[in-house]
Amino acid sequence: MASKYTERALHDVRSSLFLLTGLLAASLTLVGCQQALRKSNGSCPSRCSEETLAKRCYQLWNAKEKEDWKTVFAFREPDQRQSENLDEFVQYCKEHEPFRVSDFKLGKTITDGSMGWAELFYDASMSKFPAMAPRKVSRWEKWRLTDGQWYPVPTKEIALYPESPALRDVSEERRLRERYDELWTARVEGNWSRCYTFCDPRDKTDISEQDLANQLRLLQMVSSEIHWIEVLGGKGTVHADVTHKVTDPNLSKLPPQTAVVDEQWVKVDGEWYLDLKE
Image 1 (cartoon, rainbow, N blue to C red):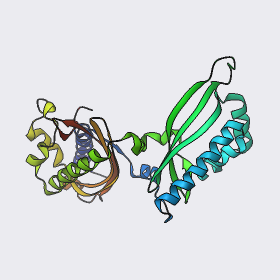
Image 2 (spheres, rainbow, N blue to C red; image 1 turned 180 degrees about the vertical axis):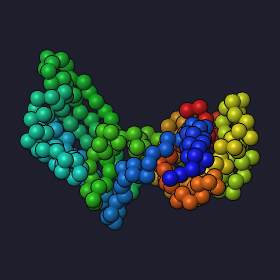
Image 3 (cartoon, one colour; image 1 turned 45 degrees about the vertical axis):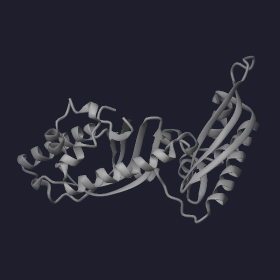
């Protein structure tokens, strides 16, 4: 049984980690959530992958337009289909699908590794109010490769994926990547003064350099793997797997842990800084 001191130390570290993630504006999730970002097991070049995605997307939305719910069900990922019943799914869609799709057109498709986006144009009308005029819809749909096949990203996981590159500032994403790497080096080296320079200047009235250092030194940074970077306007997000180890000597036997981090950045006077208040 752990001593009261060890339990107290563990509680203090957990509390500090919670504060740390707030200061860094990062969203930490257990390592199991990393499975949401599955990687492609194929070697299809970009153009081939985009053509395959376009074909899959057209098949799905053509089925939605025809209300072919059996085909729509086939576009749910394998683990979803295994846990659901086809007949129940079809019956539910017949009774509860809120919208009817018509005049569907597929625009561009873009792929980046295991992530994909499809540009959709269609008319949507209310199933229960057929007399209402349909509404024209234009949007990008997020897709991902699972077991070598393209599927739409499940609704509950959409936020884990970036917006289409067509909507993002790719050149600024390269600059943000440089800033993230520079800050990561400072974190690994324990250069807390350098880390402080990456904080949004507007936030420094609420946190001192010493306060930040006291929080950062609770963790030893081991490695970082960036999954994606998104810049929309003057705000940026770095989505990465971060492996770290607790520095408290009473918890030295704990193995390194990996967390999924959404780190928020903001552009101020032409430069990218950590957004501590987001």
